[in-house]
Length: 186
Image 1 (tube, rainbow, N blue to C red):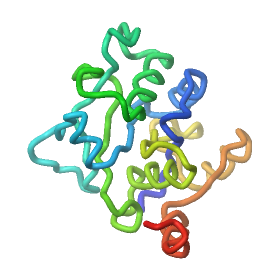
Image 2: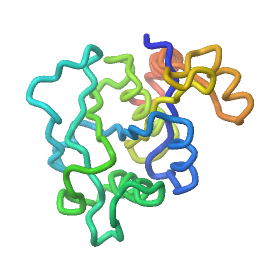
Image 3: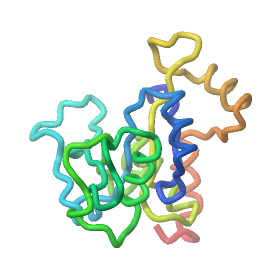
Image 4: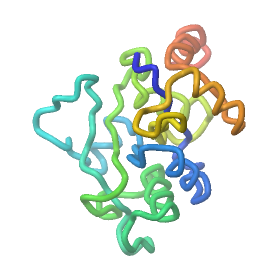
């Protein structure tokens, strides 16, 4: 729907090195897709009382992991990765995070890509399909050919081939979920 590409990975698999790659090629606005239930558990309230985003992206208040987890400023690739890994950890609670921060949690729709064809839902669906915690990282990729714009599909194809990244679409993820509904159990 946007013809833009995002980096997406399972939050529990993020490393400082993969975060550095994401930041290098992206807008730098690193988001984490979480279920409604998990957002409620962590007391991640909406960023604004009235969401005016044309696509309905459900941003919550931004976070950094708390100082007790070794976080200083929260902006480095290492500290962003640490915050994300902690968001993916079901043992963490509200007190493990400071607000505001450098990571932007997003509240995914319960039906995933079947309910909403957004990158938020795609990140969560892919993490679940990969057998990881239901928590996905996403960040929009900036064009190398036109650095004031986002990378579009023709350039994304070349970029993924050159860098060795897998390429899929939200439509493909939703279709797979529909086809495998009985086997997946959701």
